[in-house]
Figure 1 (spheres, helix red, strand yellow):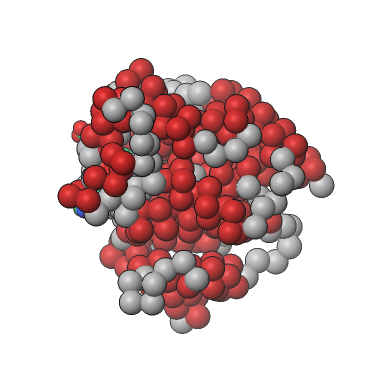
Figure 2 (cartoon, rainbow, N blue to C red; figure 1 turned 135 degrees about the horizontal axis):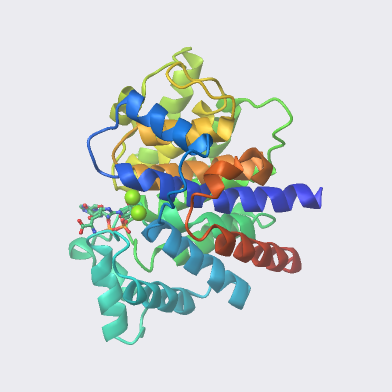
Length: 340
Ligand code: F2R
Ligand code: MG
Ligand code: MG
């Protein structure tokens, strides 16, 4: 139903916000102990605290993508670049990636003449493979949910290559976008087959990656193996070693997708009956780039369970919750208008 789809849109965007806000305190720090994480979540869920959690670059850039789509009803790279830059200079202290800031300055200094050129020049011309393109991609998955994978891929690349011109960078954003789209299209009241979910993504990535350089297909294979070998209780530490947990796209997008799958089943070290919460918990327990892995996992899980699957106790702790939700209604409206 349409109300079901709207709920999934809202779940996706709020899921991303929650992952960013709740994952931020642990980003790039020593991995939090299970006791610390359990207390953190039970405190939040019991409403014992009224502390508000601020968002970071992940949300700021996601909002720019959503606003640009709402205003232009299509991907407009120049408008996107201007929004990224305006937001950065308006609020530069949101823990942006250390190198992406160079792109913002260059775009501004060249007056947005060629919006792809500064991104191409990053890292001596190889382009960035940071996860900054993947972390902001959720609005495109929603806007393009009825389009072909081919047009989704084109839109993701245009949005990504402004800052992330390395194939690992934009392909990670494509995989993350395809995972959200698949979650959006899945009925959460029906049985779910994780191996089938991963196999579908793998098939799509095989047409995108080259055979001899395919980090995403390799990680998807590893996730499939975890299920096929009944190794479903694998620890968060082992997942970090096996799939990665850092600021690069290829070492974080697979961990986010795995966190979504892992949240479907009870966890041995965290008793919680809500699968969305389990996803965020597991994503943070992987350590490393916790805000970004949890934001990406949260957007997939939110697209699957819908807004009603996300406890209000967690939503209410996030700065900008209402603004994100209001924007999502607008994004929903333009995505319904657009049938091209
Ligand atoms: N940056 C953070 N958190 C750390 C906060 C640091 C703080 N600002 C401080 O001053 O201490 N979080 C946010 O950054 C990640 C997204 O980053 P993005 O947008 O991809 O940026 P960037 O700089 O392009 O890439 C990130 C790092 O990836 C490595 N890398 C990328 N391409 C590379 C290449 N071709 N060769 C070698 N290394 C490459 C570099 O280490 C980049 O710095 C998110 O976590 C977001 O939350
Ligand atoms: Mg961040
Ligand atoms: Mg991060």
